[in-house]
Amino acid sequence: MNIEDLTAQMEWNAATIGHIVGGVSDAQAAWKPDSTSWSMLEVVNHLYDEERYDFRARLDVMLHRPDDPLPPFDPKGLVEAERYNEHDLGESLRRFTDERKASIAWLRSLGSPDWNAAYREPHRTMTAGDMLASWIAHDILHLRQLVKLRWLLTVRELAPYRVDYAGPW
Figure: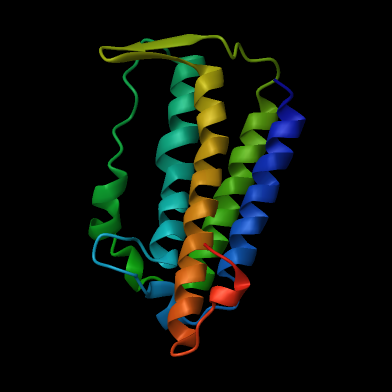
């Protein structure tokens, strides 16, 4: 694993997230296409909490304290408990970006970790490399989600005009 390449990807992902949600109003940031979907604001706040409570914290345990349990994390529960949809988008994005910078600095400070170090739980075994790969893939999943939200918002706001000439979603 080339940590410089991976952290550069993480920097690009964070910047792209900022660009996708850039320029939206507070109402647009909090808009949900349906009751089961997240808003752009909820996605950004989820990513902020993932930086603090999930990937970095759990990877640290896997690399440095493999006999300890992984810290608990309830991403869906935090959306409601932390009232993500009431936060300010600019502030939420800044907090995510700051945490991402801290994560990247931490990853670069690790030296030569054992990415094949296995962490065993009752229902699965993961390596530290699996966790890092999942962290980067998690960004991509939420980039896709944010692009879809931006598309749906655009279609909604341009109604009654159709966008089918643009091509199929």
